[in-house]
Length: 233
Image (cartoon, rainbow, N blue to C red; front, side):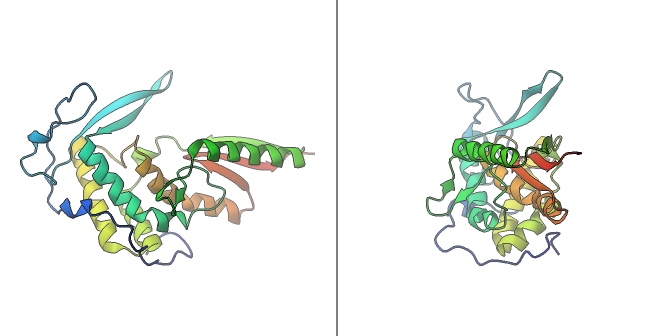
């Protein structure tokens, strides 16, 4: 059973399944990445069985003065494959996400993300309006440390199956993510891809639900949460 209360399987959205995932099969054997034109892409010729290899470079970027954030640079083919797997589930996932979440929101009509800048500005305006109307309230910001690399695939798989009802499709994505972890000796899901943001939204849904049940008004962008609460008199 999934850990989300009230989540029901939903039918697949007709016409929204890309065909590229037909290349993905159980027993994928990751290929060792090679440098490609200085862009971090991998040499597709290094994979003896096209469509069955994960080709990515793992890099780090500065998060703050003392820590770094692990990122993944996909080859073009593997980026298309990963995004096809996730985007095929995006519409069903997004219907479960609360309006208080402003990052990685899916537009089913254009089959793409809503404008991230506009969504960020909407979040800022919503926070400002609340504080103007409630001058005695405080706003506190928090986030989840090492969030993407802490995502548990078994739990994520259960959540996706409950939210979408597309068990076979979710299993294809699970095969890909298992290979990603095995190849990089990593945990969680790839960081640096917008497709991962869709999965992250669903994974944090229990947090959004808990805050709502406790009567805490909140706004969220990625793994950063803005809490709004009354101050002391």
